[in-house]
Amino acid sequence: MGTSLPVPALQTARLRLRAFKGTDADDLFTLHSDAHVLRYWDSPPWTDRARADRFLEVCRQMEREGTGTRLAVERASDGAFIGWCTLAGWNPEYRSASLGYCYGEAAWGNGYATEAARAMLRWAFDTLDLNRVQAETDTRNVASARVLEKLGFVREGTLREDCVVNGEVSDSWVFGLLRREWQPGSDPLPAR
Image 1 (cartoon, rainbow, N blue to C red):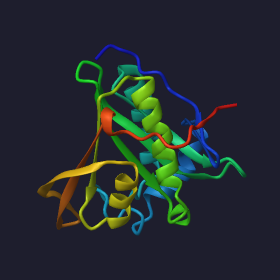
Image 2: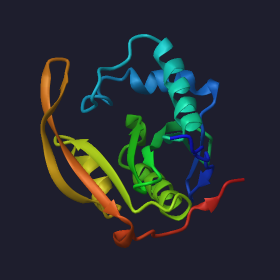
Image 3: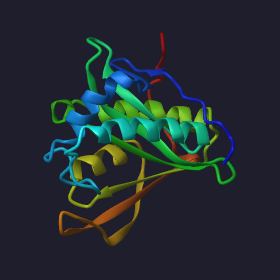
């Protein structure tokens, strides 16, 4: 692309979204090596700690190339790493990108994914001037689909048998959110 993508620092009432640091590698490995957390993921759990370092390098590369950004998500109350949120495939010409996220099981059911994604979407629509954000989730991952629907995404279709992980074939739902449909809700707080 050639266009540098700014790396935001976002804060909500309960969360901080920030650039990844090298010190996040252990937390990333713990998150991505959990088979239960990744049961609907499009790749198997990590078994090699070096994967976390490669993940961090891919984050830096996305930002350098201007194709996306991944942000670590931590609780504001204690600074605990709970997961990450990403805006990838940024295309300034088409004014589009894809949203993704991954959270540890201890964070599930607390509204953190919705809260962090809402902050990321506000940044995407307001700062990057996007017209469309897309997201995909395994059709068995009802909780992730609920997060997207709470944010205003519309399920647009099904990608049949688009993933094979550990020999298991699965379908994915494609969701889209258009700028004109976006309801930002509460404003994220500025990062400190």
